[in-house]
Amino acid sequence: MALTYKESQLVRASVPALREHGEAVSRLCYSNLLTAHPELNNLFNPANQRNGRQPRAFTAVILAFASHINHTSELVPRLERMCNKHCSLGIRPEHYDLVGKFLLQAFAQVLGDAWNQPLYAAWAKAYSMLAKMLTTREGQMYAEFGAWKGWRDFRVERKVLEAEGVSSLYLKPCDGGQLPPYLPGQYVSLRIPVPSTGTYQLRQYSLSDRPGRDYYRITVRRVKAGKVSAAGAVSTILDQKQAGDVLQLSHPTGDFFLDKEESSTPLVLISAGIGATPLMPILSTVTQRSSTRPVSWIHCSPRKAPFEDEVRRLAASSRGSLRVKFFRSQASMLEEDRPELYDRGRMDIAGMGLEKLHLDHGGAEYYICGPELLMEDVARFLYAQGVEKTRVKCELFTTGDLEFKTYAI
Image (cartoon, rainbow, N blue to C red):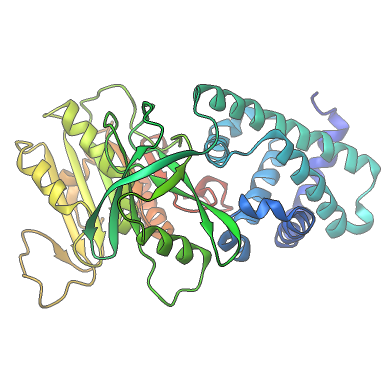
């Protein structure tokens, strides 16, 4: 049921105060929720709870929805990423009911006397509208998953070292069943039991090989020792996995992917570090489809990059359609100094020139994955060169959404 004009006005009028107290709203909502329902610690990433990213991201979505309460259709593309993430985690309608209860309680706590029955009723209806939008879309996604419901056991067939501290795990289903197709760039969630906390931790990992294989491949970066975090605990557990070990995976999903339709327009793939993982299946798929589509691969890593040998082999057989550029930010003096293979230092997008970036082509597509600040900088540069936002796709390896930030890039 849509909000009345008066209810809409009440909700929108409360947004500035709620935004001002956004940190408090986020903290109160999730702290109270997890205290009352500790079983939900099996769903939420504790690192993102401690640093506040997940609660802040959800509050930002709520307030963005409230600000566009009369034009909610404008938010649908932005909510797609959230729906994909929720389906990967197994979020269900009853979880929305719980979060809504504690969210409105948090609103009441921060607004004090300004929180009254009419405002409560208006916000309850507004939240119900948002929850309905999300659960409807998520229901469609779950239906598309077919027979694969929940977590599925996969066995590690082999483990391959890709670069220093980076390994790929080749996974096959223990039930011997077929693997559903996915789109290049999508991810799966893994459910990992963490003995030190007594809970499961859920993490997303890009499928790093192209679709159509009889296995899934994920590629994991080991977090350096000394960084005490749940993320480090999970990466350490995965780094210790060997052939024969079993992992639990969710159905592939994600809104960062290469379109199914073949294209001849230039494609520019820009990544840093482990950000190469969703771009590798895109590159592999494109080079398999066409030997003539112009593609640029631009990557920065401290030392030798993941998949570097594979990328160079594809470039060597591409007859010039694939151009590659590697940057090494911490190249050792002991490494062979071959400037034709890589540049020393950080990625210099502005110095790449028109040819590799295809800035002179009005239809070139750009896929970016890496640290958040790098993606923001690259996106800003591309926009400043006249590239439309619809041609720039970013994959964020953490909770949040660049589009929901208060500043525009």
